[in-house]
Length: 267
Image 1 (tube, helix red, strand yellow):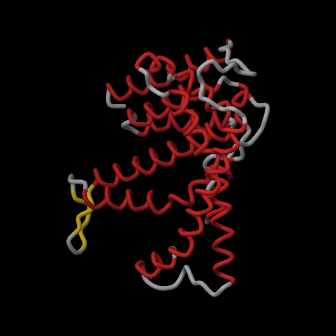
Image 2 (cartoon, one colour):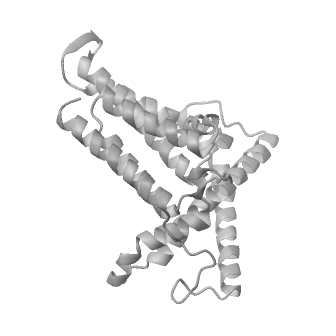
């Protein structure tokens, strides 16, 4: 299960999605998420699904990697669907025990599963095609106007980038700790929920120790390289918008406008 978590991983490539400016990819991800939350019908979700499929095709990322990344949150998706299915009022379809399943509940649950699934896939597509360094530069550039308000823009972007960068590392560390604990006779699968939670304590303690050690080593390494924040620093790769970036932004803005029009007319 841990190996199925692919958040934070970067798959190098030379596709159009990889060559886009990181600021463009961040902005179109925001537009895509906004479109998902504005979608209200089968037609709207069909449009957003088509956008996602097109993005996956252009990026060259294997669809299997996106589906694999959904496995760790499958429980959350199913739990959300069940809640919407059982507790949404409307026209009753059938009842059992104290629950009543309604027509509106079925539609809401279906749309909610679609929304969460496509949202996670679209976000994964951003991290799969953008290196942590490029993501940091893009975030810092987009949040640049906040510098006038004395906001620590560079530090925030750096923290987010480091967090994404170390997710795969911590997952690998957790897998090693679990393997070591199982070799010593630990059981993480049997018992009730409380017993399973208690069994995780021998994993969390060494994991936190390892995370703090890595954080300290990273801080020492950055200090040895005279890191002092983003003020006055130059960049090896300066970000520049190109024609393809404007065209992609225009296309996604058009998709969002189209979804808003469809929602306005109830389509």
